[in-house]
Length: 403
Length: 127
Ligand SMILES: Nc1ncnc2c1ncn2[C@@H]1O[C@H](COP(=O)(O)OP(=O)(O)O)[C@@H](O)[C@H]1O
Ligand SMILES: [Mg+2]
Image (cartoon, rainbow over all chains, first blue to last red):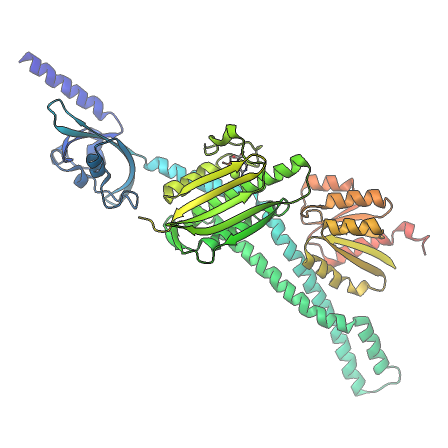
């Protein structure tokens, strides 16, 4: 009897201790019906313990896990597979969104009965911080390119201004000519008329002006179009954007990213896009994919730039950007003629804050964030091939259909 | 007539200068080189009364054009015209060129700068 009481007291203590843990801990039978849980799970579901015990976990935590787990509840999956598994899910209760990380493991209790234990972690805050970090890196990358982008805009602004001044001066001089022509008709004076008109026409260089006004207007319009394209790309890029997946024309995103990175690239490399015209629109988060592309293109430009400087070479390198369909995926490939990546650092490339660049040029977040965006957000793959002395090729593989 | 060589990698910039200086065709003879390499090729063959170059150009940049010009024709005045206004560039340029003009610049500003470079004090003896 005393033993029983001791046992109950110990159990009570255990329950108290386990309730202090922030993570939810749930013990279910083989069918997923809850046998026991800690206090954190009560809080997470907002239910009394009474209404939790004996109820299936899948009903207590109706998950909205997007595409990742398909129609099957991750807890269901863990029970089916009977093995340890981690997955991430989204759970909505009373309009509040929780990002959950679920780890589970099935086991057999001493009497041979199948059971499972789940540890559920609320990672909502962490996800939020990660999203903020991502946006910060995005703004940082465009911030570091601000001078280059200003230069890209400055050049057309310079010649458009010059052209407008030329047109203005030409028109005012042509007015003198018309004035003289009309005046000449009115009262023919000995020292006016044809001779004066000839002098004006000669000074005006009418033939040149006629031809060049048309050219000046044409080139100015092209310059203005270029400025608007750049401004549009900056706007598209900097905008935090809808985090939602939408059917997207990847070629269009590639082109506007190339435009943004133009000033980073053109003094070190020729950028050669080879975009498949048959690319289907694919579901993706455009604002995130252009961040990935920009990171990879700027990395390629930096690699080539360093390589040229080391060899004191004047010959421009090459950045090739391809898009194509490969089975059920779209692949975007960015290859450079840089120095390649030394064997020793290949395994560290995707680590956050790993960089070989001096401050101001890189903070080592580019590839870490790119990988997260491609693999976590889009269920794709970010791969690379590299050969020291030859160059590097990064490949983004995105599924054409999200599950 | 005084001759001027303009160097820029953007042909539309050269075209706009060509147009704006058409008025001055009786006093200045303008030449244009699209890019640094084209400028080097020209400078190897002949000298000009004034060189005006963009700084940031792919492959052969403004610094190289200015250095080559200093070597080949030490007496030819040199001017930089560039959209970059970073301090570092400025100080680097002042060693190689007599003057630095910011882009975008007013056509009048350009004209006056050219005039000062070409018709400065040592021009008196030429006339
Ligand atoms: N195309 C490339 N060629 C050679 N090295 C590269 C290339 N891309 C990335 N790297 C290496 O990977 C490191 C990490 O890249 P990244 O995460 O983008 O950070 P950052 O560019 O800020 O350094 C770089 O510092 C560089 O050493
Ligand atoms: Mg980077």
